Image 1 (cartoon, rainbow, N blue to C red):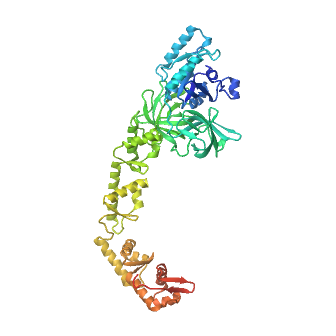
Image 2 (cartoon, rainbow, N blue to C red):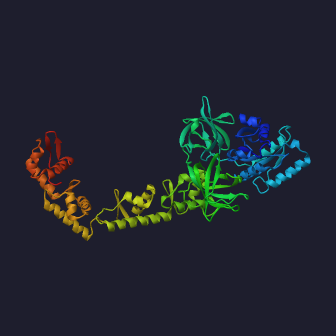
Length: 618
């Protein structure tokens, strides 16, 4: 479990964390010199009945809101710190807005420096804080007066944190593991060390991890949590991992670590439900904002159907990012501008992996998982919907995804893709139409090439093959090797094709043992000759002695007969001797002899060819 601080600069966040944990989270010399928090600080907090929870101490200065966002993302409960001698300040309000946008619902308010004010002022400040909290996710949070100097109220604060922590649901262990990186450094003997808060899943020592969006793979040499070595670490825990196989310079502070086998993928486009704060400006599609999710901070444009996004109701939008971010449905993000407005809004990811950059926003906001799944299936069409992407696109644990898939109606699972039954029916009709059109346009062709049919049916080969199998099982087509044809179709069976085939066969038979070549036949009889030759070859009415040299079967039989009367077993004959014996020129002789070699009628040697048994017919 992770507790994150929030609040205005110099309201005592770091001092309070030190008083609670005994750890000074200001570790940088610059932080010591200036007396303010600049980078994220971390400390373990021991609570009776709860155990150890991680504390993330964030900076309160407005210049470091980006760092605050990196620390606040992924926390389970908030410790909002407000100084009793100053009350609610600008960064108090912005941090509170950020906590609400991030969906942090559990928390405690610490009214620090209470020893510096009298009871009346403390009560006035408490009333002002309660009014500020109204309408936020921390509206009912307890307000505990404390002093980090005297120790007053610290036990009450611990008790309040303990009570709030007890209401936070445990994170699931069977989720894909993910950890945004917030620190990277080198340690002698350990190599590259990265730290962060594990958001989901479990990681173990010696596991392989991917570093996204870099795409590099590394091995976890060792694990630590709160300074203690661990064999494995679950979600909601501060983690330090020593990595093998990657240099410190290769891991950015915006990287995300995931298990190598999990389906996480970075994306530059997402669908989301977005809401702007009341003071925010209207956001048009031309205006760039900063998109904050975890430790990521990238530029973004918001595209909404129906015009610009204005403060008020939540809008379904598409966001285009200028750099890839690792996310899943259900992740919360914050939007800021580079101007004086600061934090302007935020939202919830509803689809981190749309099929294209021009994918339309979902039809409405707040759609349940089942409805979004139906939209994804409709959108996927003939491509099918990849099952492995659903834990990310729906934001659900894999076990829950499988449970939803079992209840789907009129949806077919083909290997690891889902396709709607009406789509399969339409694809089958497309296949039959393709086969019939091909037969009509190419009556001499044996049918449709399977690869060509796949290209027409679906970008996914497995899905296309399933359509072909179903059509074959239904008796609608016949599959012969790599060719698809209609059940009653025979190539060349039409009257015109039969006449052309007969003319070609008569031409070859009339030419005897010196038939014309392919090019000559095309010139003489037309471009359909290659298809006609394939038909005649399939019917065994001709012999393709070479690719461009067709013979009638009668012509080849004549040459075989001349061989039988001339050659003797064991005697080698030169091409010249065979030419004279067969009575044909080299133009026909060489292709015929090479065909004899392939048929094992002859054996070519250095001193000529020898012949074995010569058949009567080819």
